[in-house]
Image (cartoon, rainbow, N blue to C red):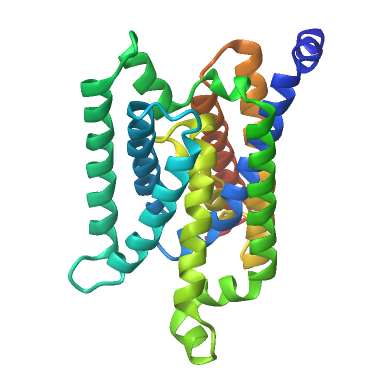
Length: 279
């Protein structure tokens, strides 16, 4: 197995895939804790379906770089979703469900009406659940992912105290002078970027698991926000790396394998928490 793994790692495409996978897992876990605590974790699922619809539209328009359409559309949807979610007429969960289902249906309809592919079912399945396209990344795509990931990490570090305040007591944070609307908007935009980056890794239907599982697992072991965030990041990176390596060696679906590791890590952390007498 070691020899086989060394053989695969000799290829730059495999190394690129591992780098991108680790960076995506790290970025997803940083804001996962905030989303879970704010009971807004389902936003990842909604935005991933928006990205699916934008990807289908980019395919119909024959764009050479679909990121030019997918990223702006997802970011704008995140901003609109935040505004709609704060309205008294349409609550947050209803707004997410509306955007999620509508975008998914719109994307699938476009792919059926204008598809030039001979394997539509395979294309849809790989988009929803992830595919081996993560191992065919170009150097330019890897550089873009690295740049965006670094920006996400810098944002989290610079705004850590404000994110902490908005997460636990938004009203108090607003009273102390924190621009909570701006922070929430920036969080939504960063999440949109993470969603777009994650689509090639785990697919649009499994992205929420990449965001939620590490955070929930870390909460079984630690109580403080900082400790939970660090533990969540470590678990996410370890599970993503393990899942990708197993996928490369065993030929299993990348996204499903990573999520399976995340689920196993949650069960393990839950049992450890129970043994320690945690709530």
